[in-house]
Amino acid sequence: MSVPISFKDTIQIRGRSDALFRLALDPKRRAKWDPSIESAAYDGEERLANGALVNFRLPRRLLGLRFTAKYGGVQAPNRANWETVRPFGPLERLKQSWSFKSVPGGTEVTLAVDASVRYRFVATVVERLLRSASASTLVELQRQVDAQGAALVEELSRDMARRQREADRMLRPGLLGRFRRPK
Image 1: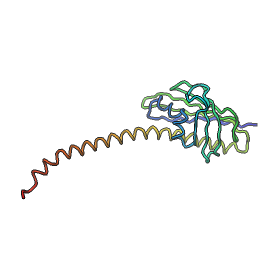
Image 2: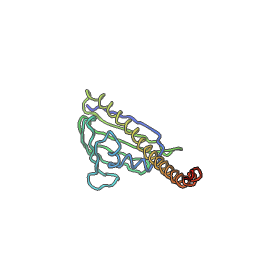
Image 3: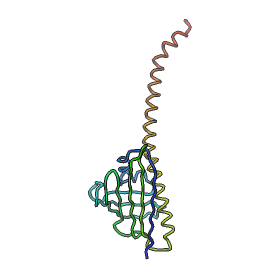
């Protein structure tokens, strides 16, 4: 008898829903920043659409399992979900549903996880792992968006510092010339 697991996590992120949608659901982008996914690649046509198949590989801390998922309900940039095609490891099925709702100051991101565990004796451990992975995914998504903003601010500050140095160089010969003693 399988044990159902179902929960939702919500976080508000300062970012546009279309950018967050691509970061969270495009497998190639997600594998770069998400610690709960070791690798992800399309199986067939490389396009985020209903019915697209994606091969995922989890990191060792999540048992290093591999599975294939099928995208469904893709309504960019508002919502999408994927569900495993066949059972893997202790899981009979795993489904992630993402929704992105624009709110003042950013986007409210909700990640819903539905799973069925094949064996009752590992259900609590698997649920703990899934909840931990979900929370870390949302936190890392926020960090990824903040990192992009931080990189932009850092680039702007470097540019301003460079301009200031150039302005100082332009003023320096005139100032130093007044205070030098004749030889």
